[in-house]
Length: 373
Image 1 (spheres, rainbow, N blue to C red):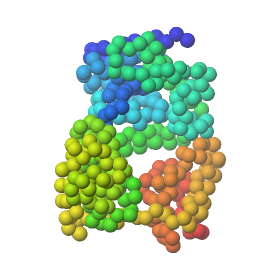
Image 2 (cartoon, rainbow, N blue to C red):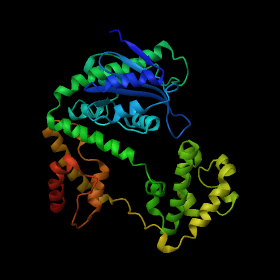
Image 3 (cartoon, one colour):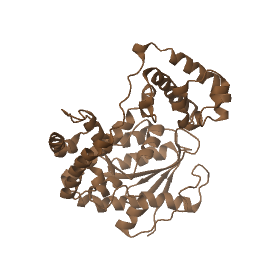
C-alpha cells in the first residue's frame, strides 16, 4: 500500500494542519527521538496519521507549537498512541502539553486479551498481517536530510497506527473503552506531576537498611543527583551512579581518597563533583534527629508470599471472567501496599493507588481474602 507522506516544516503549515486535525474524531501520534546521553529526549520527528496521509513534523524547524498543544488538549479529538510513555515526554518537552483523551493501542490489545505489553511491530503483524522493517529503529533521527527509508519507517508508524485503532475500537465494549481511557488519563496525570527530587531517595535500592541519619544523607544525595541531571540534561548515572548511592549514605566518606574507594564511583565524578559530594554528606549527616526521615519499611517477609498469591488469584479470576490480560488486573506495588496496611494481623485498607474500576470490581474481594487469611 502506497503511503502519502506530507512534510510540515514551518509554523504556518503546522497551524493549518492542526486546524484540520481538530475537526476529526481522532489522530494517531508517534515520535522519533534520541536519548543516548541526555536526561530529556531530543525530538527528531513528530508523526501524525489522520487516515488520509502521514504527516511528518520537523521539530528542528518548527518553533511555534501552540496550535499543536491545542490539538493535544482538545477533548473532542482522541489521540491514538502505542506504548507512549516516552512519546508523552517528547510532547511535554516540545509543547508544554500532554494529549487527552488518550487511546493506547498497547493497552487496548491487553483489554482485548490479544497480549500484554505487545510491541508495535508485533501488533501490526497480528492485526494487519504487515511485517514492518526494523532497520531504522536505532538510526539517527536528528540528521538532515532523513533517508528515504527513515521517512517511510516514520510514515508507516503513523499510518498503520490508524488502521490498528480502527480494528481494535469496534471490538471494545463500552466499559472496557472507558477503563482504557481512564488508564490513559492516569498515565498523563502521573507524568504531569513532576517527581519531587526530595523524595527520590524513596526509590533507592536497599534504602530500608539505613537508619534515619543515613537516610538524611541518602535524601540529600538523591535530590542533588536528580536536580543536576535535569539542569545539565544528562542521565542520572552520568551524574552519580546508582550503585554508589547506598554506600555513600552508609559509610559517609569525609575525604576524596575515601570517596574514590566507594563502590562503582566513577573517577570523573570524583574530579568534577567530589568536593560537592563531600559537603553534601557532611551537611546532611548533621541533620537534627527530628528532621531526619523515618526508617523505611522492610521488604515483606517470605511468609507473605502465600497471601500475595491468594490476592493475585483474585486478579486472575477477574481477568478470565472479563477476557482480559491478567497483567492488567492488579499491579504488584498495589498488592504490596495493601498487604503492608495491616500485615500480619490486620485490619487492612485499600491503598489510594488502587482506584477506578479495579477498586470497584476487586476491592471487596481483596479485603475479604485478607480477612480469611
